[in-house]
Image (cartoon, rainbow, N blue to C red; front, side, top):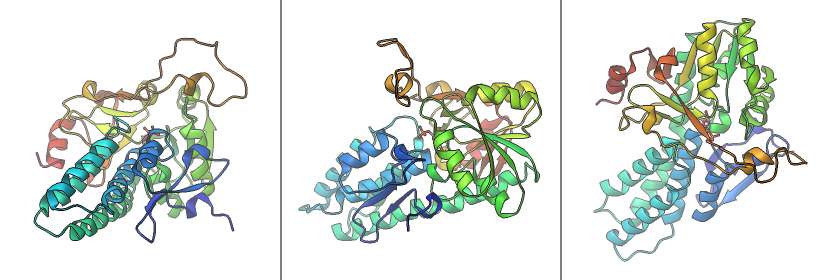
Length: 354
Ligand SMILES: CSC[C@H]1O[C@H](OP(=O)(O)O)[C@H](O)[C@@H]1O
């Protein structure tokens, strides 16, 4: 019996601890295709091509990927093993530049090796496997807590708008921006959920609308240029989005178009919340202008989704994959430890114990 998307793990290590198992998100919603990846090159490509995507899911993928890359290494000593680990880590770190969870997870895995340099290599391999599984399983509780905290901001029957996919398909179980939606659904809150399509890769239409509809929620798909109208008509009581990197002042990088939704929400007085696991907060960057913004291929805009070409051949294209929403437009940042309000600097420092 074919699995539903809610029965599939977004990203996991298989039972034999020998393969990364993902749902190929480039095939959704039309086809639920699971992939078993064993080679570091195919794992790198899965991240780059967004077969697996979303900051938390990318972090889990990198953690499992670097474990699989070194689990079969026969090294003469720990120093050689560590060098091979560092090479695999550096390679996976080149897959995408914006979601800080990729680097956070890889650094956390390296910490396991550094802490146990005097151990047997096989012991370290097992500790790496455990850490990768921990990173995956912790995401479930972190996102559930984000959902519980976010529910304090809304009421049953609210209209909620979200952009892109910060859902189960961007994480492990609840997602971040969708965590209050899943938990609210469990509590019978009957939210009216508006999902914008999120051009050019349509993560909203293809992924968020799909997973929330599969979960039985009241979902309405809108074009990106319709978020102003639904807010003008008071159809939206709050906006929840995910994030790929939060800078020390609260500026947040998220899918391209997020800052537009935030500006429109500000104009219409609609609260705009970023749902941020602390793993996505990067205190090494003072402001959003320092966040590296990935640019992707023109074909994602000119022809990716259409039978026929939708733009003149050779037209110049600018395709930034993310934008930065100023902390001034953010009503609150919802983490697993609670809700932060502006000014964010001090509370972010406390949160990251700096
Ligand atoms: C829960 S973080 C999800 C975050 O990642 C998405 O980007 P992409 O689909 O390119 O990986 C988007 O920015 C989401 O908000």
